[in-house]
Length: 157
Image 1 (cartoon, rainbow, N blue to C red):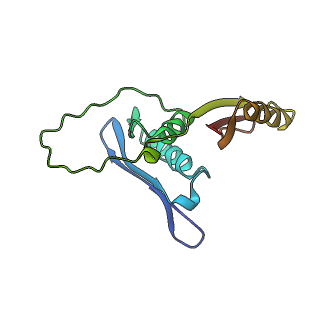
Image 2 (cartoon, rainbow, N blue to C red):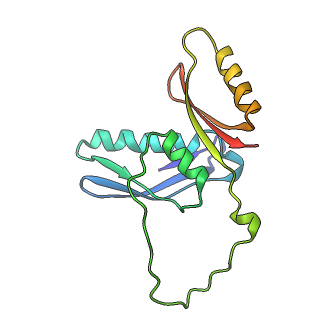
């Protein structure tokens, strides 16, 4: 499944395996200049619609690295739940892996908040954003779930 821009270029995709009752997302990617625009979320929901249309699929599973907090926050904002943690036992030490630098290991703290603006206006959301800014958070991504319901992802400033 792919997202294509107005020039016909792929800007994001999801690769998945179709089991009989469970699908597994093996890879998802959005080009850096198009991230934080809801492309991965749109692709995920399109995949959900396809699975619902098929009728026999009861789950769509995926995973990410334990340190990929941004992906984990996005997954939770999309309504996914953490089911398990996977462990690996290496049988060979021939795999040469460079140790990440301290900067690469540093991941910003993320905070996911569901927010309902109500039918009045978005002024209440602005007040909420100001409150979070005073607590040391900056808005990282806003995902519109419906006309009045949002999922806001904040990053520690």
